Amino acid sequence: MNTEIITKSKKATDQATLESEQRYKRLLASVTDYVYAVMVENGRAVATFHGPGCEAVTGYTSGEFESDQTLWYRMIREEDRPAVLEQTERILRGEEPPPLEHRIIDKNGTERWIRNTTVPRKDAQGRLVAYDGLVYDITDRKQAEERLTRAHAELKANEEVLKKTLEELQRANQQLKETQLELIQAARLESVGALAAGVAHEVKNPLQTILMGLDYLVPNFPAGNDNIAMVLSDMRDAVTRANTIIRGLLQLSAQTDFEVKAEDLNASIRRALRLVNAQVIASKANVVRKLDPHLPRARVDRGKIEQVFINLFINALQAMAPGGELTITTRGGRLGENLALSETASRPFHLGERLVVAQVQDTGTGIKPDNLPKIFDPFFTTKPVGVGTGLGLSVVKKIVDLHGGAIEIQNAAPGGVVVTLVLKAEPE
Amino acid sequence: MKPMNKEKKRILVVDDEASITRLLKLNLEQTNDYEVRAENDAEAALAAAEEFDPHLILLDVMMPGLDGGELASRLQASPKLKSVPIVFLTAAATKGEVYARGGKVGGLPFLAKPVQMSEIIACLKEHLGG
Image (tube, rainbow over all chains, first blue to last red; front, side):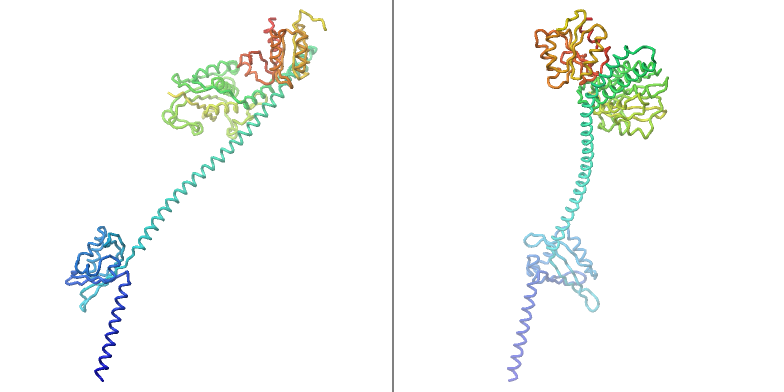
């Protein structure tokens, strides 16, 4: 009876143990992480045992690791071996290094990431006898991290691209706004121009009537009445002045016939000076010419450029007291190389472009700084009433713009005004 | 029909502005060198030219209906009038444009309004040889 009880009890115990072992094995088999142990003698690793989970992580079985003690080392990706060796040496020295993440190449040749955590086992004397390791497959996490890093880098790159695109868009928007304003201004000027042309035509007939009326009245009024003579003279002057304004308006608004050819700007200047010779003599001005004899030919409409110079010369002569000095200078060159210009004067051109420059300088009283920004506005004039119409410089500016050139008016340091005219030269 | 004074040159002036034709007539006739017929309508001017037999025609360009250019073509198409000098007198051009074209547009002489009588008379003398 006692033997039967003992036997039944032993059987039950054996069964429980077996079941426990089986549960343990099943548990181990289900784990993708796995444990391993390294036996240490005299500070050297002498044997390793890898748990059954090693096959799921590495593709190699426990048996393969046991029969080839160097398999573990050979499995490590070559670039990561130094770090693994260092970790091992630290463990063997009795240290407790932090977990190490590194790559292995599994049995299928696939690269995997693992996290290797080690725990030393010491004897009663504190000597290292073994260490246990937990290998945790972190491939998915690492791949996710890499994807995140790549995505972050892409996002950063896109952010830079977006920033640049935004800046470009802002610039383009600003340019569009400026172009829109220019178009509005051009449309406004065009309608003003068309209106001006229509008004000019309609006004000319009444002016013709007045002029011919004066022509009839002058010889038919009894002589000797100075007031009548003065009134009739004033009326004729008024008609002349009105006609000058109309002519200026028409020039401003005209769709120009524009014929550009290679011309000698020095010759244009000389012709213009001849045309204003009467004014030069009347103002007792001294004309100084500093004309570059090697000036490149300029691409200009000859008639219109002469008109520009005539206008500039007359302005200069009218600005000076008798005996003033009118200096005309020409030079040529390549912008930024042997030709330096202000920002305003160089705006329409690119560096290295071949240009021709003419400057007209007077010794008058100069222009008030407040007036300089308005100097090219139609009808703006600093001249006394009856002397100018205020259209001259606006016509000059229009002609220069048609040539794709630049004009700048500044007060000269010694006094007076200097006008700088920049035009494109004929290509070599 | 009015008797024509053969010593004076006959000038036909055509402009839709009556004040202009009136003053042209007054100014030209006061020189005693010219007899002037004034017309303010191009169609009427065609008929007047056939009847008046002018030595020269002063012609505005921009007129309602038949404009000066078309009128000039019809005048030059008439066997009786084709050799009569025509001078345009117009508000449509500036003096600069006239000079730039040598005082001619389309081959015909051109005066740009407003123009003084002295210039008109000088132009008449040039084309009439007087």
